[in-house]
Image 1 (cartoon, rainbow, N blue to C red):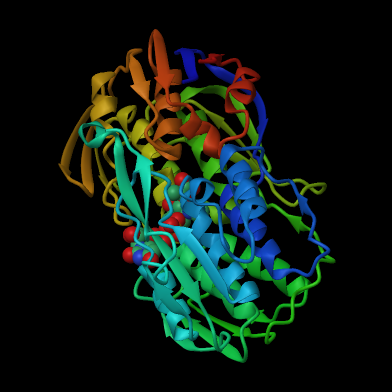
Image 2 (tube, rainbow, N blue to C red):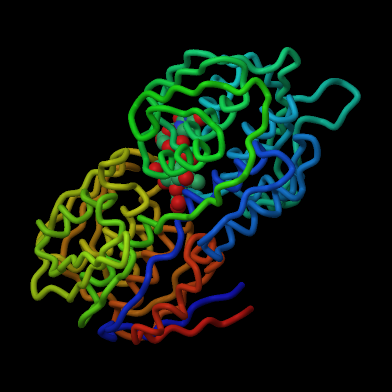
Length: 436
Ligand code: EPU
């Protein structure tokens, strides 16, 4: 497996630009199934592994059936199911894979599709393949390294009809998935208690420019006037907005490791919670607006004395769970005690044990809460990136640590961050990519 070799402690200096948003691009790609045969164009997509997997998934699709081997690799494969169901009246897919950050159920998708008239089965009709797929999984070696994941078959024999559906939890991809499904349904759909993340608004705005009628995206209630099966025509390309999570992670890096670092294409309005926390932590930064660009830039310097701040992850516009691990690294450099409260995913603090190995002082109180005692001197060590965001957090930690670190399993980092090693090298970071 490829790894990064990082020589930490170098002050970063220069400019870096934020890439296109992963989590806005994935549902937009999935939505291409809603379009007539002239597919829409996509601009500014990030060159990352998850986008490649989504393209492979869409290419593997035949009449709503997805290649199980491809689909099981990414959690975001679930995003393509709604559009496939809406277009072909059926879909089959395995339980989606992805990050090891919690149970990540898909019940709200099923509840929504059922409310639109679909039938969901775990085992396909008799005589067909069994409803479980054998997959290799570390830890299951004693069983031959294989375990089973369910396969679902979903059909809408009478067609999909608009419905009034309230989300049990405001799932981001759940909102996107049901919104896309409803675009081709018969009649009006009202989705309540939906997620309000900016990626949903970006998707709805683009679909509307191509003929959809979606109102309320970005608020807690979305109304969709269904097109009764009439496909969209892809006249307006999708332009991926800057990735707010990458932007926020880079800002955190700048606040602890920069001599003077400017982040261009910085979606300030989507990062108000993080910026508020950074301000309270006494981070040093300045935001500059430009006439020639839609987005401002932010310039950061390593603060002389960062102060501990408690952080609680929340749905948008709250502090994003995807910024929690990078922020915890900042907390290890701040003076005092920071409580990190992860409210969205139950497995998203598992990485703290690894930060302790490199010199952090973090007590994991329970799966949702960690207490960070700072400041700590971090020293180089070998770490394995467990998921996209904790992997990047380890890279940030390695950049501030003294000495050499090795970060393994960097596929996880590459899933969500375009050429991150080369872009950070341009800021003076000492990072080498060692191919397996
Ligand atoms: N949930 C359910 N049932 C469902 C769906 C979700 O109980 O059917 C629960 C989850 O277990 C979780 C909560 O609802 O406790 C919120 O999860 P959500 O469904 O919103 O997460 P997601 O849509 O699977 C997206 C992002 C994640 C990001 C979360 C939260 C994409 C492709 N993924 O996931 O991004 O962490 O929203 O903001 O948009 C990442 O980019 O690294 C990443 C994990």
